[in-house]
Image (cartoon, rainbow, N blue to C red):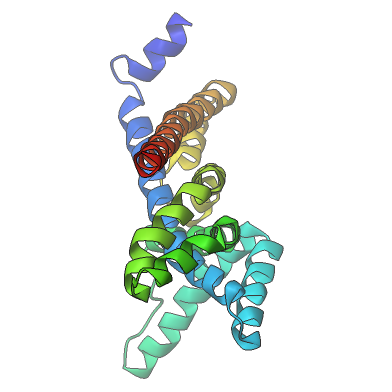
Length: 242
């Protein structure tokens, strides 16, 4: 154990690379969740729409991004996207291959995958909202914008939080697939260090420990947010009853 700690945090250790890779993994997952939340909300709106075309678009999106292997989607965006940009760059006189920044590709690809799951979470959260709340709001004269901001959004977030916590864990693990594009996140750093030292078991275990630490911390944050929102709801209900 002392040898493991010394090799990670001692002089001439790999601690700097490991910490940097952990931060990169966290940032990549956050970007993916934000992209997924925006697109997932649109997907949920399409699924809840009474128009058949929008409904089919939402269902089609979910089928494609949940049915195609995640690694293949990353390859398509990284190599296919770069090839697409290079093709158009040649039309304007640019020669050579134009590479899209790997971090951007990773955040977008994992975000689009995340959106297919977040869309379903948001759809289920909206469906769980009592219809009587909207009817009551309309009865007292609230406009659609106010209903959306003060009733629909808070309720959807509260119902969606447990599901979003699961999607977050999935995105955190999916970020390991971005190592194929050259982004130095936890998985890539583990590969580089173990390849340089020959100590594969030790540094893959260190990588696994980094994922577990991120998982534990973020799980605690989600649980606190969920308790906070439930507490606010209970307090509001008590005030109304009084």
